[in-house]
Length: 236
Image 1 (cartoon, rainbow, N blue to C red):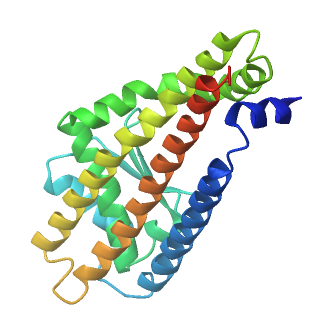
Image 2: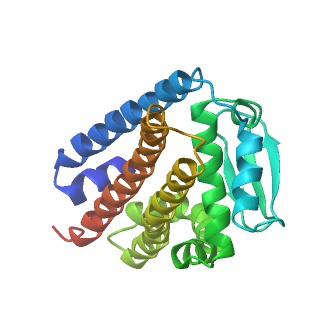
């Protein structure tokens, strides 16, 4: 019944299928490229570990109330504004490489944003509880909304609104991540931690990471438009 309703509302338009397949392929390529570059740049030595880089960048910018910790996993690095911690994956925390330097400085870039009350970061942080709530129920709301679209279209509309909050979150994330990378690269260059020969690799590593956020945002937008089209075409 669910498939029948979905096919009817989109009028057998396989454009959506091709679109999602295209995004999935691009996402795979971007993720594979990020992993490959991280592994490649992790073999390029530098004089400080990721932990040392993070502490120095924080202190150079007058930030002493943020802790630098190690977290399990690969590419699990993140800054937590709630606990004021820069959490570096094991491969970054203990590694003295270009990749580790770039990632550690990037996460400290978020700490700088937090300290300076960077508006997009504040907006993203404010959206976190809303997105967590939306993510917990929207799949079921959308599913039931599509099945009952002819008798209760308001339910699908509610699901679309819930999904729209996650899409908004994805797009707000873009300037946050790009700005953190800009701060990181500027600091790495000014302090001389990277030089004219290896700075381009730090730039390439962070650019590859940024592409994953771009693809995620576009994928979320495409999915949102898919549900919107189902809702608009419900009487066709």
